[in-house]
Image 1 (cartoon, rainbow, N blue to C red):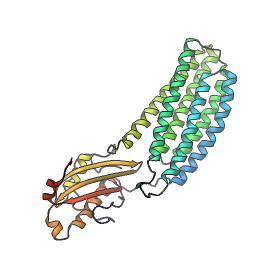
Image 2: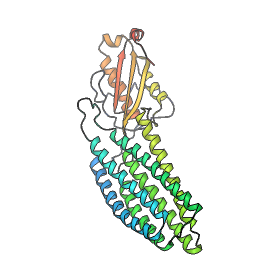
Image 3: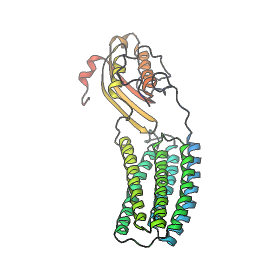
Length: 336
């Protein structure tokens, strides 16, 4: 979603009404990003699932081969990459499961369905990366102090194949909708694994050329650093959603300015914005309007204008407004 401008706009008096229901119901989805852009067509959940399955099969097959090569060569770098690849396989499997849950319709107490299952999956991916990085870091430090014998030849060959496999998996996942935090979590797993294999190839070449076996442990620590970076980004973004922070790309001052700039609007309070799941922002607010709007039947048209304003300028799918007369504010408690 994107705001129309970094500067407060003069209002939305000219916004044309969208397809909105009566006061208090959800507004329709906006048909543009910013002032005049249209939605980009992103892959649907069915296409995303197919991309994830292909990547899962690629990684699972290579992971088995890599474990065998790591045991035979005694390479921690290969074993750490295999451990990270195991977390990749788990991440993609979890993403597929979360995608199925998120597709369930809203019913009963689950008024938004299971859409946040994808956010929980992304958070789980971040936690998995933290755990795996900790395990690998401990072993890598141990091998820096007491370096074992490492056969560099198999390390280079297997890691080179790993680069090809991970490039293929990353290319497949890059075609999915990465605005979904769930898909993004799986993609970051694969991308950090790709970087790890590149480091492993370099370590293997150094071992073959110089016999410096500590290069293997150093490559493992580089993989750890990449895991920690990816884990932090996933936990930060999923945490914002789970703690119901306003979308990172939404300027609430700009939103308030747009609403206040609408004719007949006197004040805005209890303005709340949050993200239900990726690509599904929501907003609610109490809007104080001229009392004449209730008397002459203008309130429904004003509601249409406000919701069209949010849809057109900020691409907010779900907006709920409580229209109030000026005198009503004094009867409310806990407003902010």
